Image: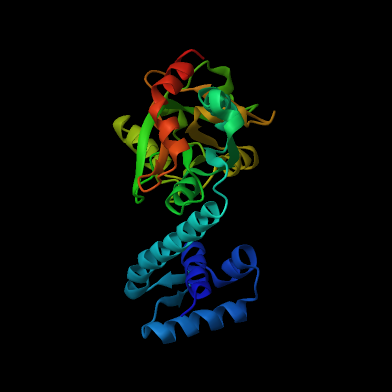
Length: 297
């Protein structure tokens, strides 16, 4: 068994399609991918995937194997990253990740916290979706990230802010006439929300609608903000999304606050408990300063 077998298997499991995994994730042919999966199943000795009318599904054995396969790759990636950093110890580094759209608010504040030692360290900055940031932290690709508290990862989180949900809609939607939107006004609209991958957003949204006594079914589930905004514009639906969406809106999509007490999603600084970076340690020690900087804005 080789690492590529695990990567191929995980790609198929996450997309639920041999074709999509081959073309969009792995850039290989479907026959080649199918052969690699058969080789993996032959090595393991049990069937891991089954085909159905809905696509490719995990067998019970496949579900058990998936968690361990992800863990193996996380450890391998962390080992590679650690070795690379050890080979260049002459300059301290800090790799920071931001949930896409949040860098506009948090990058200047993070740099202000590091201001006194910026000339001594090399800072790299990237942006991604929250679950992908959590995985990058677990695998050692990032030292810290501004993200949601993602379940299923052994990470340390420090909450630095709580962000309300807002309503996104087309710029000529009937609800634009309102200064704020009551949840009952969403009934009957095409509703866009977080997919299973965006587990935190989905849970917060479902809890809010349940407390409001509304049985609103999800018409479209999205993994990321760009997809949500695109669907709002193309389906003329509405979406409940975190407030940072306002940093990304095109002219065709506008936002309104929710009426009353809106549900919130926590924004946290996350990092791996096993990360021994001295720069990370110094940054974490100054998180109170970061929170104060945020409160001033």
